[in-house]
Length: 370
Ligand code: UD1
Ligand code: F6R
Image (cartoon, rainbow, N blue to C red; front, top):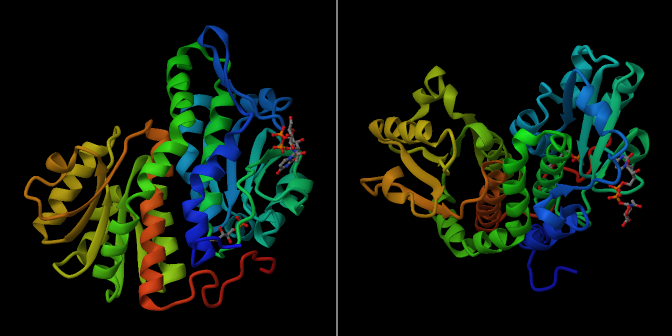
């Protein structure tokens, strides 16, 4: 079942051009007269209600939460509806307010996560419209929500979620496009995103070619105690998700940090020994990331910079950083490209450190207890 691959995680990382194709199949429309759009069959009768809701709340755990976080900015931009984020267990612990006018979107690969299910029951009893985004047809969350979208990424076996993450982001971006469908002023922006969605599987194929480089980088990092990952904007989620993958499979401490918070504490950790990944691909916040890189360098940080192809010179003029150069796509799609080399890094780190990639210690694929 693993084909030419040694592990399911490796297979699932390399499968992403195909899983993304499946996720988008039949859902992107490139019609006559350059009219482009998306069709999410499970949501088409509910889009009006979602557009009119007072707030959209994304609810999930772990990687599924991170996927919603990655797509949050484009949902805000194209829908104009305020978007908040909830980790399912925290929402339940606080019994946070949820109202009839809210749309609660539950993101879950398995569709069976106990915390997410409990949050679903809670939001339903408060009268919110409950939408599911899940990979598993017939799962508890697919059945329990009022409507939703199957991500169709195919069965995911590795405990660490990889292809489901990128497909979840793709679905939420398509949801944003569908919600913004009634606005003329965003049409150009939406068309550009749809064009890049069509090309996305090829771009993912390109970035998978970094496999060898990531193996080399893993060999350099394998003895480390800790790895920091700085991101912001669209790629704050990429930083969190990279750190989650690294810690859960390679058992190395890792922390994803919002770069805007650097001076509010994390900067104290920086010295010439601790490796730091900075995600600085081109978008509205990359000049801020450029200055983060300069400040980390001033403290002799050991930097690994992820930048857009061709930006190496401007991001690291003195060539003291290790670089991960990735192809550019529309800003909101960039998290899908950027996570791929970092998944490969987590995978190779784990193999080199001699741990079980597909079944990390103490973890289960589907967390059905609280
Ligand atoms: C559906 C079919 C697909 C078919 C396509 C043709 C299923 C599972 N999908 O896909 O095989 O090719 O029509 O038009 O039969 N739902 C929830 N909660 C969730 C996820 C989904 O309530 O968490 C509901 C949706 O609102 C919808 C149904 O499940 O009513 C199927 O969702 P989805 O598979 O995403 O719909 P289509 O893409 O239209
Ligand atoms: C990490 C991972 C977990 C899951 C989390 C939620 O690689 O897989 O963090 O994302 O347990 O699971 P689902 O998405 O099934 O609700």
